[in-house]
Amino acid sequence: RTLDCPNEHWDSQANAIDRKWWTMMNFVGYMDNVADDAQRLLQSIKSIDGKTAWDQHGKTGWGESGKSAFMVRDTAHHATNAHDKLRKYYTKCEEVFVEKHWASEWEQEAYHFDKIQLFDGKDLSGCFEMRI
Image (cartoon, rainbow, N blue to C red; front, side, top):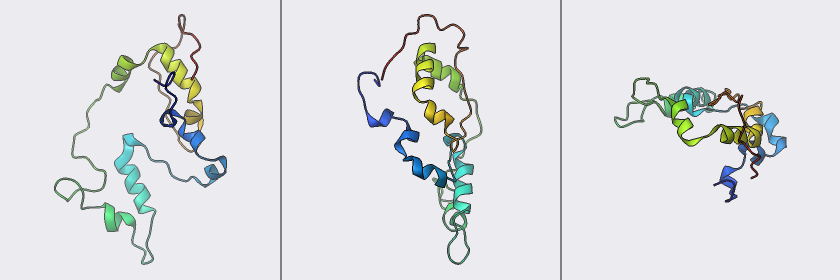
């Protein structure tokens, strides 16, 4: 719906942040590593008495039992087949469109996104220039 329904929710996050603030960015967390990133962030924040936010608020007290750490899920690692799921919703042309129009997200130095590719990108016949 980004083509016919402009909405700030579809805009690049990198473009929503004024350029002057990028030099101050020193932490970006990622959903695929949310528990470790949350711990790292909370350990970097200290109170006057030297205790970290992790020790005071993150290490325990979360989850259904109230004994888990912040953002930790009690599940075994499992394959998600994310690429297969994404291919159900994206075509090769839409992948090219997203890569082009949200390039500022992938290229932002503070983000450190891993490049993924759903399709080989060699045969783009049939793709046309979409506009947002």
